[in-house]
Length: 96
Image (cartoon, rainbow, N blue to C red; front, side, top):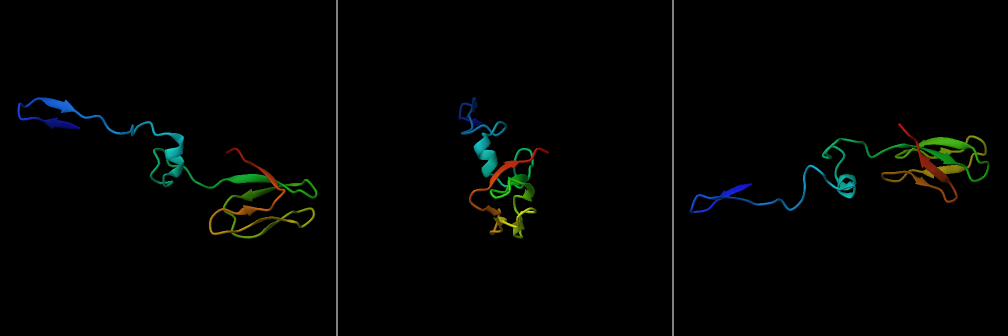
């Protein structure tokens, strides 16, 4: 931003924050379409059943109840956004 004084000298005013190098926290809070590089909020994860220790792949924003293949235990329940894992279930994000 360049402003001109009455004496026609230009002065450069610095920006309050760096727009080309935002912090990771800022990028996560921003809408998925308005990020510097667009990326989705959802992901797939491997969920381990606390009863039989079988691993099931679950979508992070699942809209149905997901049951374990081995013992039919409820692994996660849908909410308004992300699915809520039941207590005792361990998970890890899948790599692309």
